[in-house]
Length: 308
Image 1 (cartoon, rainbow, N blue to C red):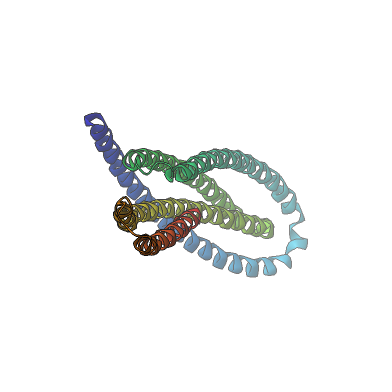
Image 2 (tube, rainbow, N blue to C red; image 1 turned 45 degrees about the vertical axis):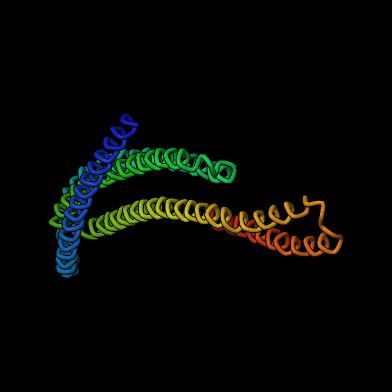
Protein backbone atom coordinates (compact mmCIF):
# COMPACT_ATOMS: atom_id res chain seq x y z
CA UNK A 1 0.00 0.00 0.00
CA UNK A 2 2.84 2.42 0.89
CA UNK A 3 4.52 1.64 -2.39
CA UNK A 4 1.29 2.34 -4.28
CA UNK A 5 0.95 5.64 -2.38
CA UNK A 6 4.49 6.62 -3.29
CA UNK A 7 3.86 5.64 -6.93
CA UNK A 8 0.64 7.67 -6.93
CA UNK A 9 2.43 10.69 -5.44
CA UNK A 10 5.20 10.33 -8.01
CA UNK A 11 2.59 10.11 -10.79
CA UNK A 12 0.86 13.25 -9.47
CA UNK A 13 4.17 15.12 -9.45
CA UNK A 14 4.85 13.98 -13.03
CA UNK A 15 1.34 15.11 -14.07
CA UNK A 16 1.94 18.52 -12.45
CA UNK A 17 5.28 18.78 -14.25
CA UNK A 18 3.65 17.85 -17.58
CA UNK A 19 0.94 20.46 -16.93
CA UNK A 20 3.57 23.15 -16.33
CA UNK A 21 5.42 22.11 -19.49
CA UNK A 22 2.15 22.22 -21.42
CA UNK A 23 1.49 25.78 -20.17
CA UNK A 24 5.00 26.80 -21.22
CA UNK A 25 4.41 25.26 -24.67
CA UNK A 26 1.11 27.18 -24.93
CA UNK A 27 2.94 30.41 -24.06
CA UNK A 28 5.55 29.63 -26.72
CA UNK A 29 2.74 28.97 -29.21
CA UNK A 30 1.22 32.41 -28.40
CA UNK A 31 4.63 34.04 -29.04
CA UNK A 32 4.94 32.11 -32.31
CA UNK A 33 1.48 33.35 -33.39
CA UNK A 34 2.52 36.93 -32.59
CA UNK A 35 5.63 36.45 -34.72
CA UNK A 36 3.48 35.03 -37.51
CA UNK A 37 1.19 38.11 -37.34
CA UNK A 38 4.28 40.32 -37.58
CA UNK A 39 5.49 38.37 -40.63
CA UNK A 40 2.08 38.68 -42.27
CA UNK A 41 2.23 42.45 -41.69
CA UNK A 42 5.67 42.46 -43.30
CA UNK A 43 4.25 40.52 -46.24
CA UNK A 44 1.55 43.15 -46.73
CA UNK A 45 4.23 45.86 -46.76
CA UNK A 46 6.17 43.87 -49.35
CA UNK A 47 3.01 43.48 -51.42
CA UNK A 48 2.53 47.28 -51.36
CA UNK A 49 6.15 47.73 -52.43
CA UNK A 50 5.54 45.18 -55.18
CA UNK A 51 2.61 47.24 -56.52
CA UNK A 52 4.84 50.34 -56.65
CA UNK A 53 7.61 48.29 -58.26
CA UNK A 54 5.20 47.03 -60.92
CA UNK A 55 4.28 50.62 -61.77
CA UNK A 56 7.96 51.46 -62.12
CA UNK A 57 8.42 48.31 -64.21
CA UNK A 58 5.73 49.43 -66.68
CA UNK A 59 7.64 52.69 -67.09
CA UNK A 60 10.95 50.90 -67.54
CA UNK A 61 9.58 48.54 -70.18
CA UNK A 62 9.60 51.54 -72.57
CA UNK A 63 13.35 51.81 -71.94
CA UNK A 64 14.18 48.16 -72.66
CA UNK A 65 15.29 48.89 -76.26
CA UNK A 66 18.02 51.22 -74.92
CA UNK A 67 19.30 48.71 -72.34
CA UNK A 68 19.99 45.57 -74.35
CA UNK A 69 23.54 45.41 -73.08
CA UNK A 70 22.37 45.77 -69.49
CA UNK A 71 20.02 42.80 -70.02
CA UNK A 72 23.01 40.45 -70.53
CA UNK A 73 24.44 41.47 -67.16
CA UNK A 74 21.03 41.10 -65.53
CA UNK A 75 20.71 37.57 -66.98
CA UNK A 76 23.98 36.57 -65.35
CA UNK A 77 22.77 37.89 -62.03
CA UNK A 78 19.49 35.99 -62.52
CA UNK A 79 21.40 32.72 -63.03
CA UNK A 80 23.20 33.31 -59.74
CA UNK A 81 19.92 34.08 -58.01
CA UNK A 82 18.30 30.92 -59.42
CA UNK A 83 21.15 28.88 -57.94
CA UNK A 84 20.44 30.50 -54.55
CA UNK A 85 16.76 29.67 -54.95
CA UNK A 86 17.59 25.99 -55.66
CA UNK A 87 19.63 25.89 -52.44
CA UNK A 88 16.64 27.26 -50.51
CA UNK A 89 14.35 24.69 -52.19
CA UNK A 90 16.73 21.88 -51.13
CA UNK A 91 16.60 23.10 -47.53
CA UNK A 92 12.79 23.14 -47.73
CA UNK A 93 12.73 19.51 -49.00
CA UNK A 94 14.85 18.44 -46.01
CA UNK A 95 12.44 20.22 -43.64
CA UNK A 96 9.48 18.43 -45.31
CA UNK A 97 11.16 15.05 -44.77
CA UNK A 98 11.60 15.85 -41.10
CA UNK A 99 7.89 16.72 -40.90
CA UNK A 100 6.96 13.35 -42.47
CA UNK A 101 9.08 11.59 -39.85
CA UNK A 102 7.29 13.47 -37.05
CA UNK A 103 3.92 12.50 -38.55
CA UNK A 104 4.95 8.82 -38.58
CA UNK A 105 5.93 9.02 -34.91
CA UNK A 106 2.56 10.52 -34.07
CA UNK A 107 0.73 7.67 -35.86
CA UNK A 108 2.66 5.16 -33.74
CA UNK A 109 1.55 6.97 -30.59
CA UNK A 110 -2.07 6.88 -31.84
CA UNK A 111 -1.74 3.11 -32.42
CA UNK A 112 -0.53 2.64 -28.84
CA UNK A 113 -3.53 4.66 -27.62
CA UNK A 114 -5.91 2.42 -29.61
CA UNK A 115 -4.34 -0.69 -28.01
CA UNK A 116 -4.84 0.83 -24.56
CA UNK A 117 -8.51 1.56 -25.42
CA UNK A 118 -9.03 -2.05 -26.52
CA UNK A 119 -7.59 -3.28 -23.23
CA UNK A 120 -9.94 -0.96 -21.35
CA UNK A 121 -12.96 -2.30 -23.30
CA UNK A 122 -11.96 -5.86 -22.37
CA UNK A 123 -11.79 -4.90 -18.71
CA UNK A 124 -15.30 -3.40 -18.93
CA UNK A 125 -16.65 -6.74 -20.14
CA UNK A 126 -14.99 -8.53 -17.25
CA UNK A 127 -16.46 -6.19 -14.63
CA UNK A 128 -19.82 -7.96 -14.64
CA UNK A 129 -18.02 -11.09 -13.37
CA UNK A 130 -15.93 -9.24 -10.78
CA UNK A 131 -18.43 -7.33 -8.66
CA UNK A 132 -16.66 -8.53 -5.51
CA UNK A 133 -13.28 -7.37 -6.93
CA UNK A 134 -14.52 -3.86 -7.75
CA UNK A 135 -11.96 -2.13 -5.50
CA UNK A 136 -9.05 -4.01 -7.10
CA UNK A 137 -10.42 -3.28 -10.59
CA UNK A 138 -10.58 0.42 -9.73
CA UNK A 139 -6.90 0.39 -8.74
CA UNK A 140 -5.99 -1.35 -12.00
CA UNK A 141 -8.08 1.16 -13.95
CA UNK A 142 -6.29 4.04 -12.22
CA UNK A 143 -2.96 2.55 -13.31
CA UNK A 144 -4.20 2.24 -16.89
CA UNK A 145 -5.42 5.85 -16.87
CA UNK A 146 -1.97 6.90 -15.73
CA UNK A 147 -0.50 4.95 -18.64
CA UNK A 148 -2.90 6.72 -21.02
CA UNK A 149 -1.87 10.06 -19.57
CA UNK A 150 1.75 9.11 -20.23
CA UNK A 151 0.80 8.32 -23.84
CA UNK A 152 -0.96 11.71 -24.06
CA UNK A 153 2.18 13.34 -22.64
CA UNK A 154 4.24 11.61 -25.32
CA UNK A 155 1.80 12.93 -27.92
CA UNK A 156 2.25 16.45 -26.51
CA UNK A 157 6.03 16.04 -26.75
CA UNK A 158 5.66 14.90 -30.37
CA UNK A 159 3.51 17.96 -31.11
CA UNK A 160 6.12 20.16 -29.43
CA UNK A 161 8.77 18.70 -31.68
CA UNK A 162 6.49 19.33 -34.66
CA UNK A 163 6.10 22.98 -33.59
CA UNK A 164 9.88 23.24 -33.43
CA UNK A 165 10.11 21.84 -36.96
CA UNK A 166 7.51 24.35 -38.12
CA UNK A 167 9.52 27.16 -36.54
CA UNK A 168 12.57 25.93 -38.43
CA UNK A 169 10.55 25.95 -41.64
CA UNK A 170 9.37 29.48 -40.86
CA UNK A 171 13.01 30.50 -40.47
CA UNK A 172 13.68 29.03 -43.91
CA UNK A 173 10.67 30.92 -45.22
CA UNK A 174 12.07 34.10 -43.66
CA UNK A 175 15.35 33.52 -45.49
CA UNK A 176 13.39 33.05 -48.69
CA UNK A 177 11.57 36.35 -48.03
CA UNK A 178 14.94 38.08 -47.60
CA UNK A 179 16.03 36.62 -50.92
CA UNK A 180 12.80 37.87 -52.49
CA UNK A 181 13.42 41.34 -51.00
CA UNK A 182 16.82 41.43 -52.63
CA UNK A 183 15.27 40.38 -55.94
CA UNK A 184 12.77 43.27 -55.69
CA UNK A 185 15.66 45.72 -56.24
CA UNK A 186 16.47 43.93 -59.50
CA UNK A 187 14.20 45.91 -61.83
CA UNK A 188 14.47 43.53 -64.77
CA UNK A 189 13.35 40.46 -62.75
CA UNK A 190 10.62 41.88 -60.50
CA UNK A 191 7.87 39.81 -62.09
CA UNK A 192 9.75 36.55 -61.41
CA UNK A 193 10.43 37.61 -57.81
CA UNK A 194 6.71 38.35 -57.26
CA UNK A 195 5.83 34.81 -58.42
CA UNK A 196 8.33 33.34 -55.96
CA UNK A 197 6.83 35.43 -53.17
CA UNK A 198 3.35 34.05 -53.96
CA UNK A 199 4.71 30.48 -53.78
CA UNK A 200 6.31 31.22 -50.40
CA UNK A 201 2.97 32.57 -49.12
CA UNK A 202 1.20 29.37 -50.19
CA UNK A 203 3.78 27.24 -48.38
CA UNK A 204 3.36 29.34 -45.22
CA UNK A 205 -0.44 28.95 -45.40
CA UNK A 206 0.00 25.16 -45.78
CA UNK A 207 2.22 25.09 -42.68
CA UNK A 208 -0.39 27.04 -40.70
CA UNK A 209 -3.06 24.52 -41.75
CA UNK A 210 -0.81 21.65 -40.61
CA UNK A 211 -0.35 23.33 -37.21
CA UNK A 212 -4.13 23.72 -36.83
CA UNK A 213 -4.64 20.04 -37.72
CA UNK A 214 -2.11 18.95 -35.06
CA UNK A 215 -3.86 21.15 -32.45
CA UNK A 216 -7.26 19.67 -33.43
CA UNK A 217 -5.90 16.10 -33.11
CA UNK A 218 -4.55 16.87 -29.63
CA UNK A 219 -7.92 18.30 -28.53
CA UNK A 220 -9.71 15.22 -29.91
CA UNK A 221 -7.37 12.86 -28.00
CA UNK A 222 -7.98 14.75 -24.75
CA UNK A 223 -11.77 14.69 -25.38
CA UNK A 224 -11.74 10.92 -25.96
CA UNK A 225 -9.73 10.35 -22.77
CA UNK A 226 -12.18 12.45 -20.73
CA UNK A 227 -15.18 10.63 -22.26
CA UNK A 228 -13.66 7.24 -21.36
CA UNK A 229 -13.16 8.35 -17.75
CA UNK A 230 -16.73 9.69 -17.48
CA UNK A 231 -18.14 6.47 -18.96
CA UNK A 232 -16.18 4.35 -16.47
CA UNK A 233 -17.33 6.43 -13.50
CA UNK A 234 -20.97 6.18 -14.62
CA UNK A 235 -20.60 2.41 -15.04
CA UNK A 236 -19.09 1.98 -11.55
CA UNK A 237 -21.82 4.15 -9.99
CA UNK A 238 -24.46 2.09 -11.77
CA UNK A 239 -22.94 -1.19 -10.55
CA UNK A 240 -22.86 0.06 -6.96
CA UNK A 241 -26.48 1.19 -7.21
CA UNK A 242 -27.46 -2.17 -8.69
CA UNK A 243 -25.77 -4.08 -5.83
CA UNK A 244 -27.49 -1.90 -3.22
CA UNK A 245 -30.93 -2.38 -4.80
CA UNK A 246 -30.40 -6.12 -5.22
CA UNK A 247 -29.43 -6.57 -1.57
CA UNK A 248 -32.82 -5.12 -0.52
CA UNK A 249 -35.37 -6.07 -3.18
CA UNK A 250 -34.16 -9.66 -3.49
CA UNK A 251 -33.84 -10.23 0.26
CA UNK A 252 -37.40 -9.10 1.08
CA UNK A 253 -39.35 -11.66 -1.07
CA UNK A 254 -36.88 -14.41 -0.12
CA UNK A 255 -37.48 -13.78 3.59
CA UNK A 256 -41.25 -13.84 2.93
CA UNK A 257 -41.03 -17.15 1.09
CA UNK A 258 -38.81 -18.69 3.82
CA UNK A 259 -41.33 -17.67 6.47
CA UNK A 260 -44.16 -19.31 4.55
CA UNK A 261 -42.13 -22.48 4.01
CA UNK A 262 -41.64 -22.68 7.78
CA UNK A 263 -45.42 -22.68 8.11
CA UNK A 264 -45.63 -25.52 5.61
CA UNK A 265 -43.27 -27.55 7.77
CA UNK A 266 -46.01 -27.64 10.41
CA UNK A 267 -47.82 -30.93 9.75
CA UNK A 268 -50.93 -29.74 11.55
CA UNK A 269 -51.82 -27.45 8.66
CA UNK A 270 -55.01 -28.32 6.84
CA UNK A 271 -55.29 -28.57 3.09
CA UNK A 272 -57.07 -25.19 2.98
CA UNK A 273 -54.29 -23.60 5.05
CA UNK A 274 -51.68 -25.06 2.72
CA UNK A 275 -53.54 -23.69 -0.29
CA UNK A 276 -53.70 -20.23 1.28
CA UNK A 277 -50.00 -20.38 2.12
CA UNK A 278 -49.21 -21.35 -1.48
CA UNK A 279 -51.24 -18.38 -2.72
CA UNK A 280 -49.36 -16.11 -0.33
CA UNK A 281 -46.05 -17.48 -1.65
CA UNK A 282 -47.07 -16.67 -5.21
CA UNK A 283 -46.98 -12.87 -4.67
CA UNK A 284 -43.35 -12.65 -3.38
CA UNK A 285 -42.33 -15.15 -6.07
CA UNK A 286 -43.88 -12.88 -8.74
CA UNK A 287 -42.18 -9.86 -7.15
CA UNK A 288 -38.85 -11.70 -7.23
CA UNK A 289 -39.38 -12.65 -10.90
CA UNK A 290 -40.31 -9.03 -11.77
CA UNK A 291 -37.26 -7.61 -10.03
CA UNK A 292 -35.02 -10.20 -11.73
CA UNK A 293 -36.22 -9.01 -15.13
CA UNK A 294 -35.76 -5.37 -14.13
CA UNK A 295 -32.25 -6.18 -12.92
CA UNK A 296 -31.35 -7.85 -16.24
CA UNK A 297 -32.73 -4.85 -18.16
CA UNK A 298 -30.76 -2.47 -15.92
CA UNK A 299 -27.52 -4.41 -16.49
CA UNK A 300 -28.12 -4.39 -20.27
CA UNK A 301 -28.72 -0.64 -20.10
CA UNK A 302 -25.44 -0.12 -18.23
CA UNK A 303 -23.56 -2.26 -20.74
CA UNK A 304 -25.11 -0.35 -23.67
CA UNK A 305 -24.25 3.02 -22.13
CA UNK A 306 -20.70 1.87 -21.40
CA UNK A 307 -20.20 0.67 -25.00
CA UNK A 308 -21.38 4.03 -26.30
